[in-house]
Image 1 (tube, rainbow over the protein chains, first blue to last red):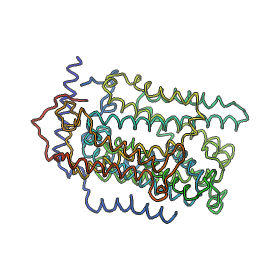
Image 2: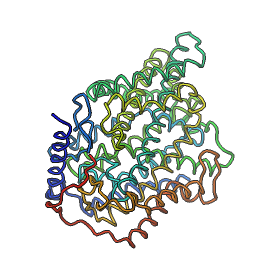
Image 3: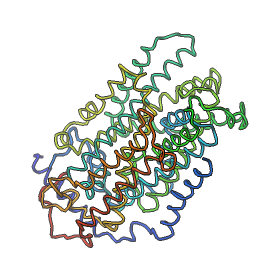
Image 4: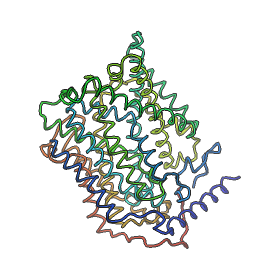
Length: 56
Length: 474
């Protein structure tokens, strides 16, 4: 297969992937709501800061 | 546009096309398993050893666990969400904020991080060989460490060029062995010494001011968490759900890695050495110690292979390297590591400064990506524009660079060094209140938010299927 043909196939594949991902139903990527954000900020930032202040 | 890499190498393995949901491998269990195996790596030993120089067990434990969690969360949240939603590789995920060409600056930091860690753990491999030989009664000179690094580079080349299958075989043996080694170290620490001895062990080489020691240990913990930046996108783009993209990273790369670093910290304090290869024999005796040392030495190779593999993929972003054969890419990646063959001790001694410097490299990028993905783009990006090199592309900005983001990186570096210079050890009084990497995260984030509000990029609502790529950069 020539380089040009390979490039063409590659770009077509890329275009179809972009279309598929951009138009995918958001629900297909799993739920992620306000509770997740609050939980992550508490566990990922607030609790570690409190622990580090207490240990100082 | 570039052709497929040579030798029939698969683009799904070696390329950067966005992954569809049906192609992704990681569910909840496998995402946690992969992150856990990634987290319990030999660089945890180095981080724990550096912390042992400054603080005792209790303060060190808090700094390493809490710092790791904060560092991982701050830099992985936007990347995880973006790479999971769009299936893209992480340098591509930087293009909306940094621009098509600006993202290559991020690539430089990425490569510095990966190759710096690789060099350090290759020296650890050389030290491991030296200590095994000494335990067996031989007295090799210091040259054995450099020779060990050279052997490690060759082994890395051998495994990396034979593809991901051989790496997976090695990992399936080494990772459980390393987890057993860490568990064995923990058991020996508590059975032979006990918590009382661990908790009162003095730090190895602290500064006169305890507050500075604690502040630097906090910095090491956060910088250690931020060091995971290089692996976030690879993991997240392979997950099927958003929760699987972020929770395993915080839980495993943050919490589990922090605990592993802490076990290393305890070992360093009890044995009285920051060098991980000197802990195993005093802790486990000659037989178990040499076996553990051998596992750790081999684990250094697999960790290096993962880093070199990721670095090689990242180099595919450079136009001149997109069509190169994989063995050539690997050779180019390994070339800078040659310095560690000739100056292993000198470069190894810079390891703690390098670890802290990871905060300088990744904190500003993390702050900018967080603001960009959540507050500027509202979690919607134009995936087509990621792969569009034409000047009309949405993420082309000025000659391919978003000057606001690049100015943010410079400002972040200045902020970091104003608070703490990891090479000279100089600190500002504010460093006792605000960790340098947190300041270097926040200041560029605020600058970027203010700057981009003036540019007002329009949020993407729905894909325009009639649009086609003019100049694809795949």
